Length: 205
Image (cartoon, rainbow, N blue to C red; front, side):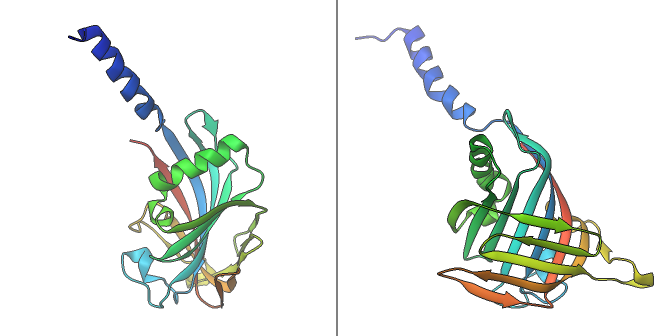
């Protein structure tokens, strides 16, 4: 039996439209804060390889403004605990709405593909974050970072521009006071290691 051309067109539309709807437009501007186990300054941020292996880190992403489709992401925070190239755990603040939580999950492979690969868990937990010009602290029940700014000429904070990474812009150098993770499967504790605060601006094409 010959299928009318109109029916074929309708079937194709039904199959393709939902696929397009799975990836709405998105944009985010965020403050990024991280400490890892590398010595100062971490070569990874300059396009190199870790100078201490395994490279263990905690990165906080605090979204200042942004959206995923119609979902407003302003104020959303999540922390990534990772062993570089091996595994990561994602902790999103327990203050998110269900829509925001789904949006963060959807954004991971789009804007944070390196952390999405090897993800062991995605959980909603209490998150705290305190930021001043001289000190940054953030934590979840399993991971925490306390770091202080590194000063250079005339006592000014050391800053680096145009690093090769979208999440590394307006980079300010920090040093960990205490940087740790404690869970049933992984444990570490470091001090005097690399830390930074930067900005991130990224959007769908």
